[in-house]
Image (cartoon, rainbow, N blue to C red):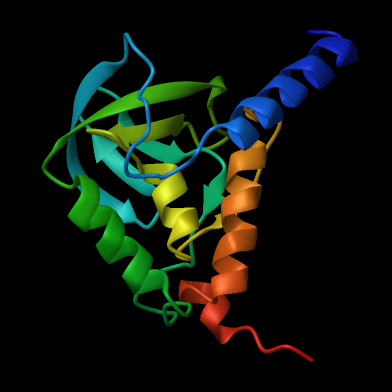
Amino acid sequence: MKSPKIWVLIIFLTAVSSALAGFSSESWEVPSGLTDYEVYWAIDGNTIEVEELGEVKYIGVVTPKIGDGFTDPEPFGLEAWEANRRLVEGKKVQLELGYDQRNSKGQYLAYVYIGSTFVNAYLVESGLAKAKMVPPNYKHMFLFERLEREARREKCGIWSLVKRL
């Protein structure tokens, strides 16, 4: 296991690089050397089924639930699912697997790119997902938190439902 000093350094460098970059989720510089995978379908707003790997959960984001036939969808759950479907379903994406590559359900954990669009960030930026970091997959933590603050301020998507006291 890496020492705490290394984690602090990794988090600091990620913060600096995110803060210095003029960010747009649709003009992201995709890391080189990533493998292309065909997306069979979007399971929900932040989970896809891809060739070879099976289910892939997006790192750093959580979208509202779409319901299961017994429960109603959460507000903006269907919109998040539709946005995910529109972006990736039936298309080739690049996956950057996380430091922890799988979760307790056996799903792969990844940052997802299609063309120059960073899908995880797009969902947060659009107000269709909340930032949620699960150790040790912190790579874009500060970016996602900043995008969430901006979406809240602009009252995008799920944040349009939040009333100020």
